[in-house]
Length: 205
Image (cartoon, rainbow, N blue to C red):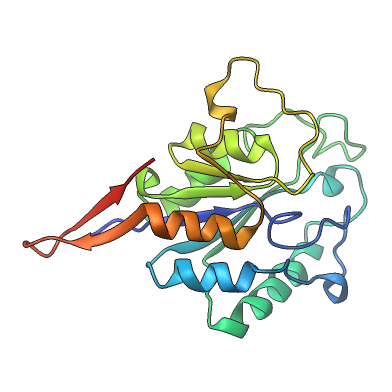
């Protein structure tokens, strides 16, 4: 069976405006250019999977169950262009949290790659043909550590720019917004069908 390819998506600041610890679906909207970018990538056959840190759970600001409506609202927004959200993976942990069962050290909080690896296993994804798009270097690192290529959306949310020799924190590309990130992927990672009917990828990165 042919492996899938995916775009792993950070949520807050990348897909939607970054309203800290918001779980009110009425306050959720997509950033400008997101739908257009998703439509471009959908035509290339990518799955879309959200990978998100949700420390508000560990801090006691909201419950895990509150994310159900958040996911449903994002799915509704995607549906405006007939875009399907294949997965919503989140980390509820934070060592310094106030809720004991979530205030633990984990391997799923970005920049760790475990959520991406879990999604790849569940959805039969070839990580070498996949991308992570986020607005901070922890997103970039998580994607590259998992085996993807990563694009940073430079919208001002990353204010540390700390690499310290870790090449996983160096993005493959820096884009000013989601649409430009999508155009970059579509231009430089093109699907081709060879004579045997299998697929190969052409990239210029």
